[in-house]
Amino acid sequence: MTRDRKRALLALADGTVFEGYSLGAEGETWGEVVFNTAMTGYQEVITDPSYKGQIVTMTYPLIGNYGVNEEDVESRRPFVEGFIVKECSRITSNWRAQMSLDQYLKKYSIVGIQGIDTRELTMRIREVGAQTGVISTLDPDPSSLVAKARSLPTLEGRDLVKEVSCSQTYQWNQGTWRLEGGYEAPSPDRDSLHIVAYDLGIKYNILRIFAHLGCRVTVVPAQTPAREVLALNPDGVFLSNGPGDPAPVSYAIENTRQLLGKVPLFGICLGHQILGLALEGRTYKLKFGHHGANHPVKDLATGKVEITSQNHGFVVDMDSLGDQVEVTHINLNDHTVEGLRHRDLPLFSVQYHPEASPGPHDSAYLFQRFVDMVRDYRAR
Image (cartoon, rainbow, N blue to C red; front, side):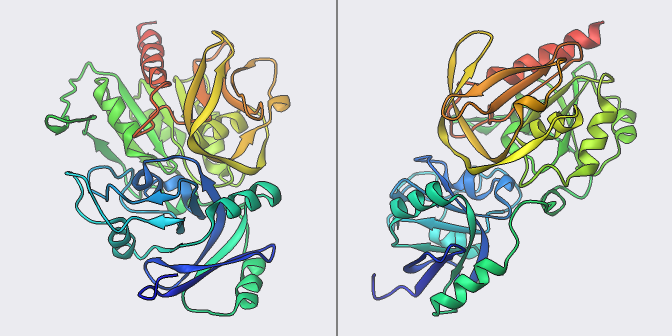
C-alpha cells in the first residue's frame, strides 16, 4: 500500500474483508458488490443508472488510463454506490480527457477502493454470489464493517427506479457522437416517428440512437400513467433500462400492461423484465448477474451469436411465459432469456444493451428493427 493514500477497507456480508487504499472520495458507502468484465467504458459504467444500489468491481486490473470527459456520460450524474479497482492509473493520457478518474469520483462524492486483489474478490462473488458490502475510510474495525454489511438491505424488493428517473417530461434532441464534430443535432419534422421513452433509469445513448434514426423523442418519468403517454400520440413506446428488482416497480408493470396492443413496444434490460411481468411472466435473481461487454447471446431465429454488453441481476423466467410469447435470444453462458417477442402484438425486448457505448455494436440493428415495426404499424 502506498504511504500517501488513506487506508480503506471493503467488508462483505459473508465476513470477507479486503484492505486497500482510498480511491475517489473519502467516507463510507454500501451496496450490492458486483463485478464488471469490460476492459474500457468505466465512465459509462459509473454513470449508468442501472448501477444504483450497487458497488462495481472492475475485473480489468488497470482502470482510468484515458481519464474522464463530460461528453461520454450516460446520465445526469454518477449513480454507482462505490467503485473498486486493482489499480487506478495516475497518468491520464487522452486528448479528450478533462480530469482523472480519481478527480471525477471525488467531484461526485463516490467512495472507492483500490489496491486489493480484484481477482480474488471476483472469484468470491462467483462462489458466494453478489452480496452487500461496505467500503470505508472512516471505520478501521473489520468486524464492525462486516456487521454493518450484514444489517443492510439487499436489492430484492426495493424500488430503485424512483431514485433515478427524471421528475419531468422533456424532449431529447441530441444525436450520436462523431469524431469530426461531436454530437449531432438532428432536426426531426412533424412527419417523423414519435417515440415516447419511459425513464426507468435510461441511458443517454439509447436516446441518441433514436434521434440519429430521425425520431422525435419524448422522455417521461417512470410513474407517468399510460393514459398520459397515449395522450402524447406516440407512434411507439420504449421501456428503458434501470436498476434493481423489477417486481416492486408495480406502476411500470401496470402501465405497460395497459399499453399492450395499443402501440408498438420495445424494452431493454429492466424494460425487458417489466414487459415480461406485464405479459404475466415472472422474474428471478441471478447468483452474481451479468455485467460486462463480452457476453455471448444467440439469436434463435438466425443462429447468429452476438457479443453483447450487459448489466442486470434479474432475468425473466422462460417457463413462466405463455404460448403467445416467444423467446428470441438466449445467453450462451447460462442459457437464460435474453430476448422475447409476442406472436401477435407489436412488441419485443432484449435483456442486453444494443446501445452499448463504447461497444460492442453487434446488436445495434435492434433500434432500426423497432423503427421499422413502428413505421409499419403506423402505415396500417
